[in-house]
Image (cartoon, rainbow, N blue to C red; front, side, top):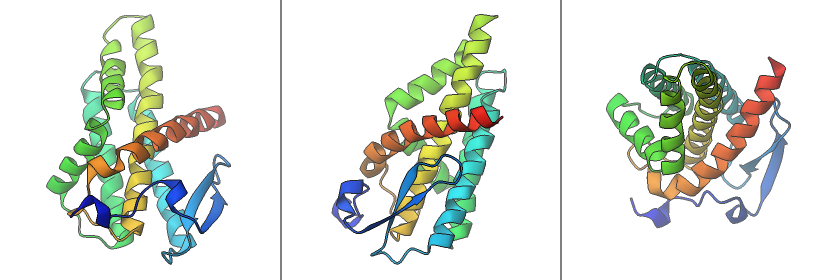
Length: 190
């Protein structure tokens, strides 16, 4: 599917907005009115993302490099599966893995930081603690960002087949930054 046919993820491209506060952070999200999005359905999707982001944060505490990354991949796959079910979209595990890999892998700063955070756990003492702390933030923010992209894509009528990771990279990075703020706000509640 050509890039032009997928609605732009930029907030500036959505002129008629309804802004709703996120219950956990108080940040504003944008719900386009013109697409006929059901606010209750949207809110439930956001809650799925928050639950999976919190699970991703917990996965960041796994002390073993690569095992934490594998567990994070499973959390993201489960989020995708949950959102597909929520939006009535056919789920295919193989297509989903490719899609999620393309989304996160296309953002080299995020992918590189995840890898470094994971492998820092090999360094005894400070490295293990620093790696765990950074993985909590990075894993939670990555899941949060992927979830926001998926919600926007599905609510725009997209499916797994027409997902274009390159199209969503800028929005993913923007949501990754918001995801870090979400993680910090969530950690203070623990």
